[in-house]
Image (cartoon, rainbow, N blue to C red; front, side):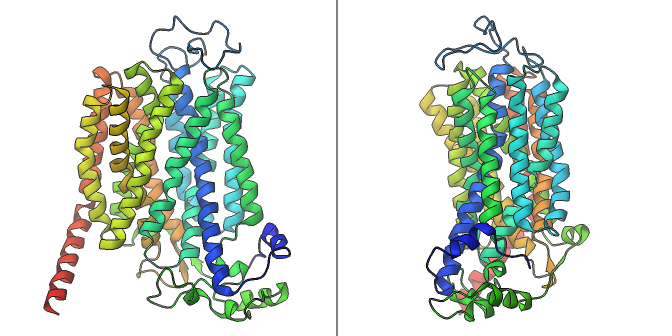
Amino acid sequence: MFPPPLGLRLLWTVFPRLDPATRLRRYRYFILMSTFLAYLCYHMTRRPIAVVKAVLNHDGNCSTARPQINRTVPANESGTWCDWEPFSGDSPYFGYLDSAYLFSYAICMFGSGFVAERMHLRYFLSLGLMLSGLMTYAFGIGYTLNLHSFWFYLIVQIISGGVQSSGWPAVVTLMSNWYGKTKKGLIFGIWNAHTSVGNIVGALIAGSFVDYNWGMSFFVPGLICCAVGLFVLLFVPPVPEEVGIDSEAPAGADATDDESLVTVAGASMSRGREIGPDERTALLETSGEHKQAISFFRALAIPGVIEFSLALFFAKLVAYTFLFWLPLYLESSTGYDAQTAAKLSTAFDIGGIFGGILAGYLSDRTGASATTSVVFLFLAIPMLFVYKMFGTVNVVLNVLLLLCTGFLVNGPYALITTAVSAELGCHPSINKKSNALATVTAIIDGTGSVGAALGPLFAAVLKNALPRWLAVFLMVMISNLLALICLLRISIKEIARMRRREDSSHVE
């Protein structure tokens, strides 16, 4: 067992000592906020390229372009970087960069789950955050050094995708370690807002600089991400045992029953007195057996993993098509400048926050995560059509329809990547002496990330195939339908189970 983080050990010398239940409750809140902040940073660093491409990859009138690449332009002056090679004009290179990043992310995700299951999560997550921040900063160096080599940006994006794959298996496993085997749909639904909040923060930061120094759109998020990586290294304990608390709850314990989660280690503390370092070490060394990481193929054989993985493939394809191309679509279809388009695009993410929360709540109440996802996916198809037809009428309607679209598109995506992954990682078919959370999470999100890689690539090819991006919207609607089909078998079983439950309650 590793010692507690250095920052926590220093805080223990300053703050008053608390009873076990209070400590556990506060640690849970701390872990919730820390992992929220950590994954917010991962998404914050992915957003700048979507904002910057609206001014570098401009396919409209370049008569107002800046005559000099590095001249300072006031923030309120419109214009584009039409002369910035290799992205000038209607270049396909940004589509290639998106796909390089996402394919690298998807491929490395499977390896990240393997490594995360076998490496100390605090070191794994903090290293991933710091490297992600450095790679984001490196992309902005292209502006400072006036670099025009496509290969430079391509290599940075490939490395970025690899190091960013560290985030999801780590934060989901960390949350599951602290919140136990209880219903976590609502908790994860609220917590998963980090994805949308990160997109919003990244868009706002990048949009603030993009009109006069697009390099700063990458520098600022990159430095913030590095700082959060250092915070994780100093303060975040990946398992309760590391700070003298046992995570194993008695069967049937409620998620809010803090006392039930305090076992031998916690019980050895008298009220108001925290155990000392020597006592803690002895307790932790004897608490629980070392769990063995599950193999990739064993995780793949868990019931439901394949179906949810395939469903996420299509659901994430839709979500990431919007993530990477929505600012450019708004800029080209409405005539707004890049900064305004970046701000408008955040409505999709705001809607996604509430969609993820409601999906998690419904999953908890019904115990039917597949059925919940199917309903969202079904309703998203006509919503995408409505947005395509009427989204550009005016700003107010655009925002309202984007909120609804994000709500329905991100609801099942958020549910599958969080609560469903955590639930399958603790499936009854898994031996209690085995660790499966990071591996299962990596399989599901890695498969989804392949779809996320293909979506922006197809969008780059299809955006001009039919007028007004119609081909892109047809692609995302068909993808939602395919995601729905992938979950139908599980959904039918869930509905049958709910009916049997209802019938038995009537009999009683």
